[in-house]
Length: 73
Image 1: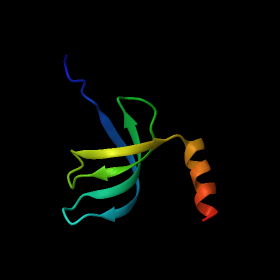
Image 2: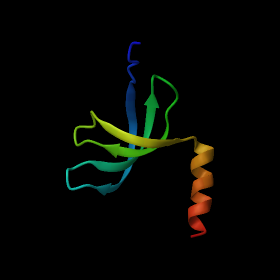
Image 3: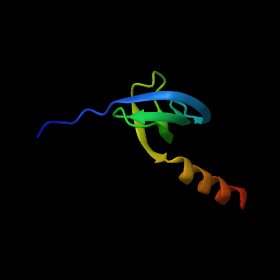
């Protein structure tokens, strides 16, 4: 079975949450995956942004719901 290539474009860097000792950064970005409409995305990126860790992709509605939850903390 052939491995499917995933394409991405970071259309907007919103902010960096943390940086590891190896230089990887956990970031909130606006990312287009496989040419689709961009969504908010939280994940770790290598310094060159050519490798990534597992992450979480959110629609605008989901991000707004998360904001409401976080404001209650």
